[in-house]
Amino acid sequence: MSATSWRPAHDGPMDVQLLVVTDCPNERPAAVVLRRALDDVGLSAVRFTIRVINDQAEAERIGFTGSPSVFIEGRDPFVEPGQRPALACRLYRDDTAISGVPPLALLRRALKQAADQRNH
Image (cartoon, rainbow, N blue to C red):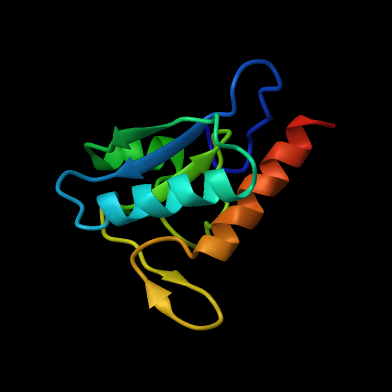
């Protein structure tokens, strides 16, 4: 499934995945930020899975652009135009910094938008 062709699955729990490469140094910090964001937007019951991306073919098939990545309902809300699939570390930018984990405020917004889409 490409990152642009997802459709929300309205039945069942929200699908949230943390995608990483083996030995990603930002896996744990990203998991902490993701759990906090879910809790902050009222999605405490939503559980996420951690998925290890093992090779370039898998990265290309799903649109994985670096570790760690958060996929919500099969979509990476942080993918930038022109970003190519890669087995690499990923950096995130917001108004104040560059980090190896998604910014909490942006992650909250993406989760809230996905939850709102599921409810409509």
